[in-house]
Amino acid sequence: MQVTIRSLLTTCFVFSALLGAGAEATAATTPAQKEVESNPRGQILSLSCSSCHGTDGKSAGVIPSFYGKSPEYLETALKDFKTGKRYSTVMGRHAKGYTDEEIHLIAQYFGTVWQNNK
Amino acid sequence: MSHKISRRDFNKLLVTGVAGSALGIFGTIKPAFAAQKRVVIIGGGFGGASAAKYLRKLDPSIAVTLVEPKATFYTCPFSNWVLGGLRTMADIGQTYTALKSRHGVNVLVDSATGIDAAKATVTLKSGKVLHYDRLIVSPGIDFKWSAIEGYSEALSRTKMPHAYEAGSQTILLHKQLLAMKNGGRVIICPPGNPFRCPPGPYERASLIAHYLKAKKPKSKILILDAKEKFSKQGLFKKGWDTLYPGMIEWRSGPTGGKVTKVDAASMSVTTDFGVEKGDVINVIPPQQAGKIAFKAGLTDASGWCPVNPSTFESTIHPGIHVIGDACIAGAMPKSGFAASSQGKVAAASIIRLFQGKEPAPPSLVNTCYSLIGTDYGISVAGVYSLSPTGIIEVPGSGGLTPMDADADHLREEAMFAEGWYRNIAQDIWG
Image (tube, chains in turn orange, cyan):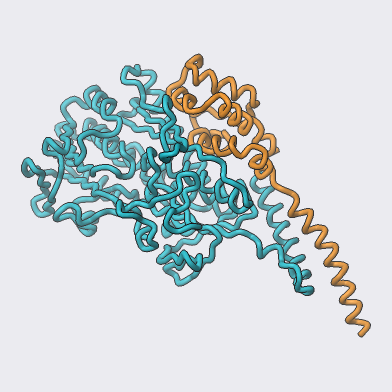
């Protein structure tokens, strides 16, 4: 009987400890999830960019990388591609597909997603 | 960074798993791990592999199982570069190592033989049955073998390859080109719309011409097309005139281009205007959605899969998303890039749906480079959004390389084509 009570107590202790740990683990969202929750529209606008520029904007080849750039830099660059102020072969054709507000959201997404990777 | 997430995710699973067993004693609270959402993906090409990676990247709590019969996936993009002698097969082979080890995707080298939408299960060739909360079907294309008299799957494996699924077909067509005599004639027969990779047959003609010009300059290429016009037509024709004058002839459907019959014994094809003989004949048959889509009843009368353009969820079977060449995606072409873009949108939508939230309105992109010569690249770009009529190209956006692009521009686009392949492959399988 004693043994049973002790094991039950132990179980209760383990249970509460683990419940606490489990709750903490569940509450700890990943950086990527945080990014999604704060800017879901920016995310969906941005995901296609990675196909040419690499995941999170980290390019392996000759296509420019923009990983680590600030939101301000990205927003200006995209707007300049859109107006033709900045030379491009293909980026102007892409940038014309987005409103200035959408460009802002894309710049926010890529301008912050790398900071979450630190 | 991905390692950090995997470890944290693993710890989280461990903790909730053990806590779950403890909680089980009391029998009142459900174990946390039972709530883990499961996504099964059929097809590890551009669409399916993108969805797998991005589901895990954006929400590592989701258990993702990818079913793909090939341990190495040879990409159709850049397979024309192999035919032109600019790449090897090894260069276009993608594996699933990173999806498994870096992103925690459960990759099964197996093929799906059946889908039970009511039970939410997928049966595999091995006999294994997978349960899912959401299913993504990315099966690519199948060929309508009986559309051209005399053509068959067996013939495609011997004398007249289609080479429109990369791998052994690419190797076969390449061998035939290598064996052809100087002064030989290559016939390419592209299908009518819609089909996979609209500029594909014309890039193929260009890069075969690149090889022939260097090695067998007396040879000719005849394109017998079922269509009246084709993708990037003006740009391709200008490139052919510049780089390969007199080598490539294109005939449209109404002017004798539509092939109705082939004959392997005489190595000839028949059009409404007569019979043409070739030394190498590349027949690209008309297409429809991949087999499993038909088997699961995901196709409509067109032979392709109707989907909700916002989430790519089937309009026939809820809970099943169809992406890539197999789905009907409005203005988007059937391309690897489009499939990847759709895979990411489907992944993001599924995550929102699991959270009980409205998916964000979709934004989709396509960018396809075609190489005409080593320093001569052209492209088509498109940005797509949702309208009341479905997926449309954003007005005023996208379009082709300008017709008056100078040599520097074309050289830069040829370089970007290489950069494109490196990054898109890395973004999907890396």
